[in-house]
Length: 109
Length: 109
DNA sequence: ATACTATATTGCCAATCAGGTATATATTCC
DNA sequence: GGAATATATACCTGATTGGCAATATAGTAT
Image 1 (cartoon, protein in one colour):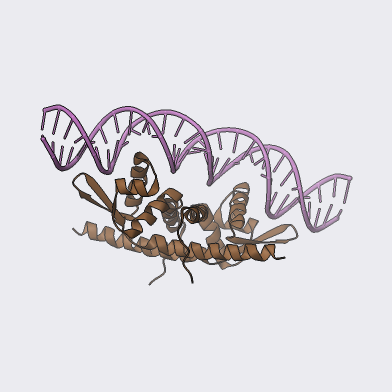
Image 2: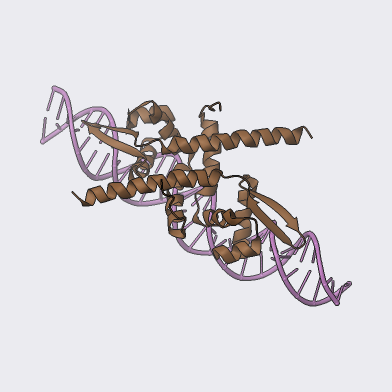
């Protein structure tokens, strides 16, 4: 696994993709898709997002390759394209755990 | 390593932290800090960012715990607080590699 | 063709935010 | 004390964007 150099250009590409994830609504969508493929309507019920809004989020996630699209009759089914998102969530959850530990240490002093 | 449940609240905390990373300028700052602790002036030279701007980015990164601060006389030295950022960059770089491979397959068809 | 449903798109508004200028604060040196 | 330097903060502006309402598109059914 050769490491890519973090040139400004690469950092910009990374930032663009992180921005797509840095949004509670989109993380909720992706989290709902963990259980498997879902239609837009189902995602709306799962997340409480409005239809137009949801559609816009899905377009972005699809453009950046986070979700796959499958059309069947009137319905469009979305699914996770890879597990990148949850690798990142794992890293962040670990960090949150550390933050909470540190906060407890502060209170104990 | 117990997995935290990805409740909407946790997803919001994750999104907040990802947002801090989803910015080329801040990724450049963090990347510059990989070589070790740096003063604000040095970071300005390394990144080309303006002083006020840089200071604002550093405040955010410090608030969220991505960097540590050490004051010495007139200078303030910042340093990476953990390697979270580059774990995430690794994941994203792998994704970028896959994107490029997929694009090449598209062109070959 | 008409009616109906699921999804996408467009246009708008309010909020957020990166970047810059000017100013404030803190520290050192004289 | 005052001058000089390093960093932080306050304020403004332009650009981006999440959310919503309205409309458009596509597919199904009758």
